[in-house]
Length: 217
Image (cartoon, rainbow, N blue to C red):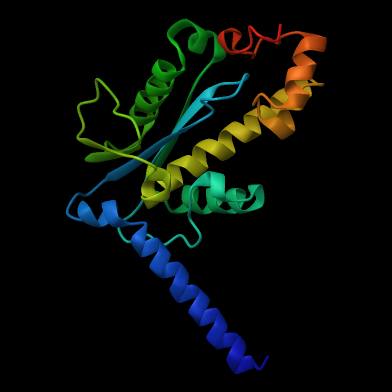
């Protein structure tokens, strides 16, 4: 392949990526006259262990972060790279967590909403509107729009999903050192076969959600 062909291919790839990001900015364009648009997403609703976390991110207007996407569609390496870029470019961002004891006390949905409200409260800047993935956050006096599969349809929500996911993965990697044998550094607390077998053999740890694991201990 000639140098010219390589340059043309790279240009075509970049244009395709910018077209994808444009399509993924539908809601940001919808609220183009709003100053601070905040994307919010959660991570960790399903695991047997560890906290549920919510990320909140306000990106600058017309902010371009190439390859930004739903965190579940990205490799760990790509998520880490995007995490650094999001944190560098964001107008404001925050992550909040709710611990397993609280999840057992109020249920995972309420714990998720609690984490989302705390993430909003932790932002240095008050948003003018909130774009949230799939749910409605109660008792928040800021206009909000719930978007089904929002982490694939809004760059702000996608950014929030990455910030929350990378933060939680790092927390679970730390827990893997504290509680060896469960594979937390691999399964991030989710109920894999390895994790279920460890529960039967080793029992529960302080970071397990008792309401999630009664069939295994």
